[in-house]
Image 1 (cartoon, rainbow, N blue to C red):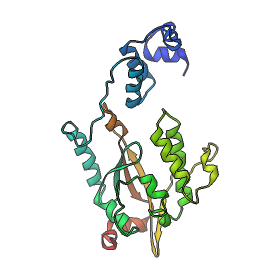
Image 2 (image 1 turned 30 degrees about the vertical axis):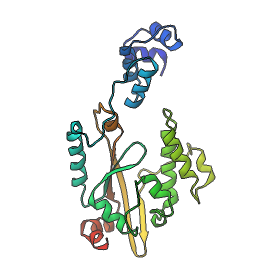
Image 3 (image 1 turned 45 degrees about the horizontal axis):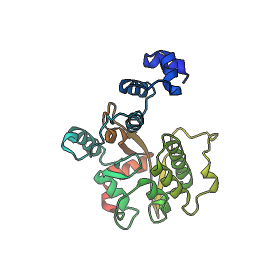
Image 4 (image 1 turned 180 degrees about the vertical axis):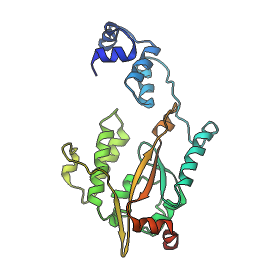
Length: 248
């Protein structure tokens, strides 16, 4: 975005914006917020901008279980419940699992001997040979897609946790060394399905990700609700007909 375009979007003079950019003028708190809004800066980074300009952060980061988050949590739980009998999960910005519906646990029980120990990170679950990786038939295609997504996220505002997670995934055995460089020229498929196979059992799913439309809290803005859907009729029949519950 050019300086002139930003000045027009933020409704400030390009001369003043130039002074702010070069350090000749100290931006007011309102100016920091106005520029952040025009640039669509995430709430967490808006707080960082305010601190850098000498002002207190504006946006809270509230635990999802806090009383003031009850309406948001009920909305999330509603989506998880309505996704039955298909899996649905809620993750934070680092892909740590926060919530899951019963269908998710039934699905994982088809492939894992027991619930994952300790906190679950869904990225690790896909890359770890002790996770679901051995059961993902098209693992290389899926894993490459996830790595490229993390490359994009790590290329945004500095986030050591995302960068460390990316480095951890790239260090797993069998991960091609050229994945350390984003594959910018690769033509992606219109929709990527994940194919799980264990013996004669074969399930194919794709997912959608839902976020809050008007969040004013850092936690809510960073929540991702991932819902999984059958990618073929055989998977739809199995998931809808109670086969997963019987298998679990």
